[in-house]
Amino acid sequence: MPLSFWLITAFVFGVCIGSFLNVVIYRLPKEQSLLNPSSSYCPNCGHSLGVLDLVPLFSYLALGRKCRYCKNPISSRYFSVELLTGILFVVLTWYTNANGIDCLTLLLFASVLIAIYFIDLATFTIPLSLTLLATLIPYVRDAYGIGTHEPGYELMFGWMPRSIFGGIVGAAIFGAVRVLGWVWKRVEAMGLGDPILARGMGAMLAISVPLGAYPLRHFAVWVLACCLTGAIVGPLMILVRRRAALAQTEAVLGSESIGQEETAEYEEEPSSFLKEIYWVGWVIFYGDLWEYLKFTFFDRHTTQEEAPPPEADTFVPAPSAIPFGPFMVLGFFTTLFVGEWATAAYLVYSFGTK
Ligand SMILES: [Zn+2]
Image (cartoon, rainbow, N blue to C red; front, side, top):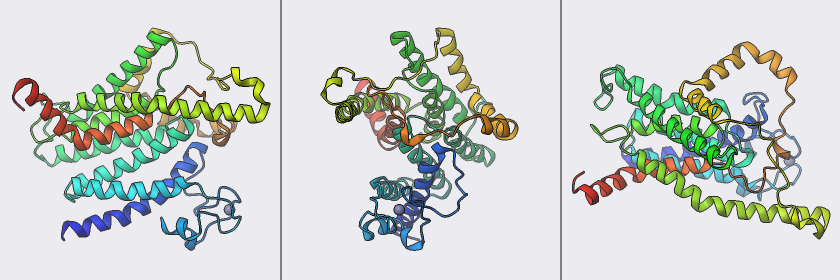
């Protein structure tokens, strides 16, 4: 099959997966089942959607961006997610030259990252099940490479899988950012979801280096890319949200309340340096995995009765808060696509050798 065939297939496949990701992005933060109800429904009127409403990309445009039943506008996020997934699938298929297992691994990983990107943006949390998936995908790929003695998947020091090594270092780097943030400002600089996500990304990047290269070859570019996108887009994001929050307060209370900028505050649990260090260790030693297993198999019944359903729709973050997950996702793809080029260019520039 020519590559062009696979690129077109990837796009069609991508928009369909994007359609499913929309369900994940909408339901997962509300802890609703992904399979029940099995049919999608309009978030406004609750009417279940038919085949005509569910053709990816096409339905949104053909129905005039409105629900066919209640005529309420449909969020453009649905269209963006489908289109973005389609385009990303094409790029990744081209990038891996449609090479079976590498291509599938990256498509799967990218799907998880897209869901994380939009969920973190909307709710400031990253569901554990997604960060765990992001960790497991590179591990499984690595295990396959090790098991089949694929070149480039040799164990480090004779016993350490490269993905696990990359995961530990990734979690440690972004965990350190979290600890430093606490030392500097005494607030939670980033959530725990971000070092967990870094663990998966670090694992993925460690097995994506060119044949025979050191697993951490792209890590400098990666950290730089995450921080730069954060430093450039972050302040813009805060500015936009401050304005929106101000406009909202003014609309509700009149112009007296301009002084009160911070309308919502996190309830911070008091932390300590040791506690912060503990949490980084918790991430590196898969505390999230144990927690997830415990919750799924032992605590499910008790926890579900006690915990009230989270209200994702009414969530109002502090105007100065920004989610870091989206920047990590952008940083990851930047590194995947230009990391080798940037690293090689840097090495040639400083040492005259690659
Ligand atoms: Zn509707």
